[in-house]
Amino acid sequence: YDSDIDKAKKLIKQIGLDSCKIDNDGDYFCTFRISDTRTQGVMIYSKPIEAFGIARRRISAVGYASGGPLSASDAAALLQANSTYNFGAWEVQQSGSKTMAVLASWIPVNATTEQLTEIVALVAMGADLIEAAKTGKDEY
Image 1: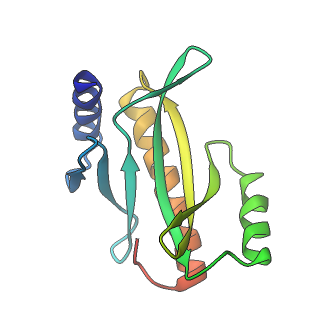
Image 2: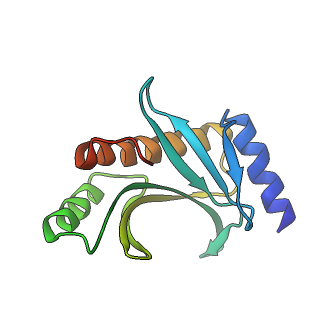
């Protein structure tokens, strides 16, 4: 497990995400600069998950949160957006009383620095687009 954290740390340094915090599980919460006025928080999970013999690392970002369940139109819009992505998908997650729309992707743990950079950028920009459209804020 420690070697997974070390590998993640090395990759994160290589892609230039300096403003990262590490949680108790060894996962990274990094800030990705979208523009001069917008940023997006991205989670890069250290511990890989294995499926079908492929060890993968999760990358995710919150797009927005609602005070209760998502509306049917919001849920349908996220599902429709999923059909246009080739790198990840929107998920709905609960955090206390909030329902969060989270854009997530999985990449092989042996992904190159360039591949990780691209996935982090795609997830961050996708989540930020929804956040800007839904809230007009730069909260996440």
